[in-house]
Length: 294
Length: 256
Image 1 (tube, rainbow over the protein chains, first blue to last red):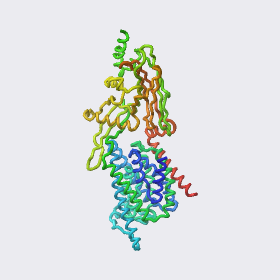
Image 2 (image 1 turned 30 degrees about the horizontal axis):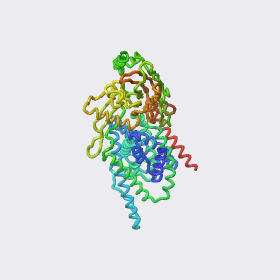
Image 3 (image 1 turned 135 degrees about the vertical axis):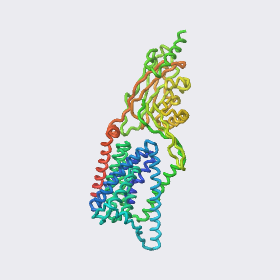
Image 4 (image 1 turned 60 degrees about the vertical axis):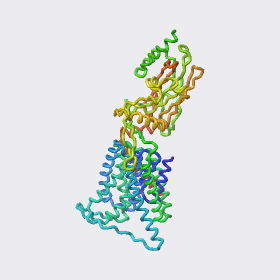
């Protein structure tokens, strides 16, 4: 019941803010006492469901650049495989919880801070009555002019396939380690580095997330046995219902205020994880089973 | 004279007990015992239960027993204990201790505190009391072993997997006894052993042992088995379920 509720809450937020819930759900699961390794793998399983659900809407609106999605995916699958291998290695060393926590502290901190800065700037500018200029970041065109160029009709691009593969690989690794879809990295990377038009970005991101989180789920199930299907199913139920309700509420609220609120939540979760690492824990020892003894 | 010799004789005989418990039948065993269930089935909604262990004491050979002890022991495990230490300002897992052959679950119920019934050396021989449990130290780091075992006991007690209750065995008119042991929701699965001991004057006068299988049953059993033995299929099933649910929900909400 708690889990369906949490799935609902995070689903509500992801529907309201228009983000995938993984980077909030995994820390929440860890806070209520789910082993981090299980939280990551089961959350990846849940994200498959939410990205299928979201991706279908974009599919029908033809807002997915499928060749681009496939190329991102090929990098993503390789990334998820190496992420799971790294995960397995560190798990044997007893350091995987640390890897998960540190990854979250870094990413939640950076992304929360960037989002907060951006939304406060927009709010202040709006108060002064000035129109907000969309910042065009510097040109990265040499990256896009690398060899192996390919035409992407729906994105109206003719760029090298190397940057999308590298981005896909990086996000796939994160997905395996953090139990996230990685949309929060993928979407800005597609807009600012690949310079894709915004109307196909979210659909394409969701499209490749389906396959990457599916592969993360399967790799974790095979290598680490950390996928808990029952847990994932409860989260799916809560998540999908919450997402639908959240999307309705989200339409009535202002974008920059929403983003400021989300930024504060993201920072709060990051700070909590950091404090858990810095403060002396009540119990210094932890117990892991190695197998059945004689 | 005979009354004096017998407890001594029994004490000598029972010295061999922990290794060769079969010998327990060679003395006049005063205990007849049973358990309220012959197996524990863990379903998906399992929230723990109370197990009743009971029996009769034959007072004919030695008179009334001083105390009765019941031990429920889960399958042995090898475990790794890790201790956190502070590095670069954060607490990270440091040294690991690998300990072998420790029970995954261990509950002692007795009619009196076990320390009053027997000296600790004797309890160690019989395996009565979590404080005298011995681990086979897989790393032979002897200096740290005690601290690690204490941490192990603490963690197990917090998880309700180790328990000692000194008033949990009720002896009725010296002849019947009953003990209740609480089984927690998250108990490990496997073959458990039950052990019943009756003591008089520090000597063992009755001993019975039995097995109690603890298994996950129903849909949970299939998932549990699949997760470990058919992990590829299990992963694919997880993904298929997710795709199905995501798809289904998208269709349902589009109609409404």
